[in-house]
Length: 568
Image 1 (tube, helix red, strand yellow):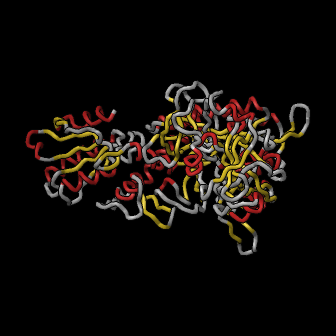
Image 2 (image 1 turned 180 degrees about the vertical axis):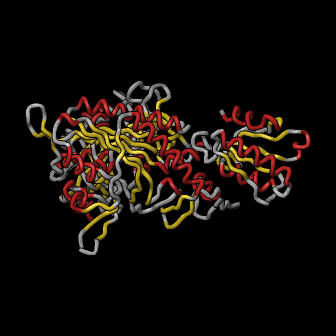
Image 3 (image 1 turned 120 degrees about the horizontal axis):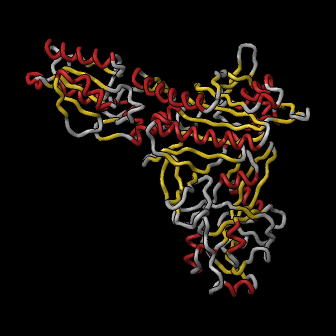
């Protein structure tokens, strides 16, 4: 077998799963974000795939295999050829035609559906594949966690009614729960942003892990959990008190020399950050149209750019350059405010309006304004939830405090609606003979990410401790001294007995010290081991489960039977 274990962590590895998967000889880096799966690693990948395949088939989905190389024409029809960023790897063939490597397959599956599904009688339908994808990530890292080339299960469903889509969305939600439970993972289902895929409703399946790349807010009292990009919270706004009289007072200027930041202005004026109105200028691009928007937040809050992007329906949102800020407001960043910006589009976080009078920049250097009332001193026609929710704020469902946890996204389910079917004219005839666009759903699982997440959740000081369902082998049998023909013969006998019983078993007959063999098998996460050593003189062999602390002694005559019982 090819088992190239390493004693030292790879230099570019930052997280546990990356370190252990390379050290255990399961993967090898070929290029940035691109990995080869070695024999043991591919066995784990196949186990995850088989769990997915079994549950998807059970749920009524049908497996297909779509092309990796996709013609630009399909992406142009959906409108994503121009919108998708540099993550889309584009190239030309010898005839100078444009293609891309599929990062996801909404366009291809929609094209397939419009070719073969013509009537409501053919619906609903769910098609899935397990296939290699490619996204040219700007910063691939964390091994299988964020690679450029990766294995993914993606499914797409087609429907004639919202009720049918709702039912299949729930079916896939339950199917994903069975998949990740079967993989032995602890996970949460969280509200999420749909990102480049689009759609109205989406949820992520997050494996909980300290090294998770995604921040989550979770309620311990109810089931509410959300990715930070989509999280909402309830914040109590103080009513009355010392701030309320300012609502009736006129706006007045105050000198704030060299005080630009919220912290500096708050300390200088001895005003709570929540009573400052932060003014930001953002560039956005929507359907090839470029523009700027002024965004208002309470001083203590941070802008959630994903929420802003979704509110604007924009393809891109970015902080405006200083020159653009000065052109719109007449002053450098730090002294900007909404008062007098009659020609600018202003969007405020909903807490700005609820917070009453506040302090803003005066659009004049080294100057701020006191007693600024939203709606009185500047027009406030657009408000939305634009802020990042924070730990300790109230759950929007039950009011309990939200807690910060970290997770690894392994699955994502979407309600796409008619996002792709309308753009690509994928239609069916309803019961009245009228052409209508398909309602669609989309359901993805990162296979390699699931493997990495399993390691992040199941390891110890010696190496990987795979959940039983994912372990590359269930058992390894090893003679303590490979040159001892008596030990080797007994090990061979037990190996053959377990093999005949259907156990995925290895015989480690390498001419290595027993300590080296034990370290290798613990590093790889083999689920159990049988050592044929000194106890053979007493008619016994040693057995230990990977997660156990102590050896068990089995009579030689019953060794195979006992191992089967313990593995069961």
